[in-house]
Image 1 (cartoon, one colour):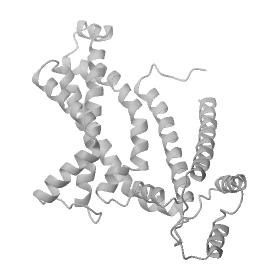
Image 2 (cartoon, helix red, strand yellow; image 1 turned 30 degrees about the vertical axis):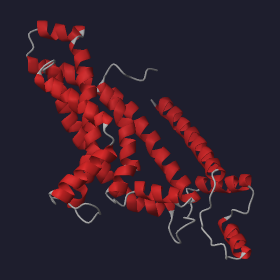
Image 3 (cartoon, one colour; image 1 turned 120 degrees about the horizontal axis):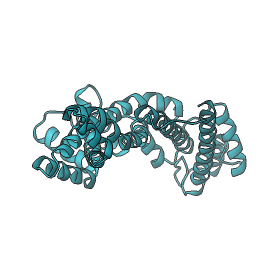
Image 4 (spheres, one colour; image 1 turned 180 degrees about the horizontal axis):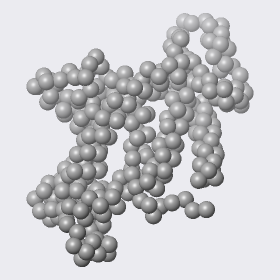
Length: 306
């Protein structure tokens, strides 16, 4: 297990190095500057700004400086806003993004799993067809469309919840609902398909022949083996939770790190974009690593052999 962990850790370092390198050169390849100056601004001011930001140096030298800073966990300061650091933005925005993201995943997992299990047990019945329709709608309708719809219906027409902002638990209801909609459809469709496949396995017929009740078969045999595909999907979903729901945060004006990323891209803020991208990548890699560990806990057949 130690050998496997070290191997995965080294692969994570290589992945982060490649992400940092590609992001750095892509940022310098696109047009635009992190500051906007009028036509009447003297050239000396522009030169002074480039010298202060280090943009007057060759690209390869900027790259070496940036990678050296990363080794010291220095993600840099914003080139657009004075006194704003990448770590500060992540620290302030991460809890808010986590509330919206984890709320969407938790509600989506609970409701979606329940619907998927009921649909599989009531195969080809009214409930099954209803879950299939819900799953198709959830996959087909983008979350920003659904978010706009519930925003108009519950916030504008019925005035039950605030339309935008983040000043209390009431402001979190609609963003979490928008984030959960796609997850509900995804989990319901996935668990339904997985349970139908599990129900046709030989060990299910063996359990029935041993006289086990239907509830025992479902609880001890069907659900545990059917949850493996859901565990696989938890990796990217949890990564999405911590890195923010960009579109949802934009629609509901939620001050999470997704909002920070959008502003950084709009302003061509090099250090902010690169710092957030590397942090997002690190979170994603960690989530995938944890999924591999959870795999062994869910299914005893999956183990790390010597």
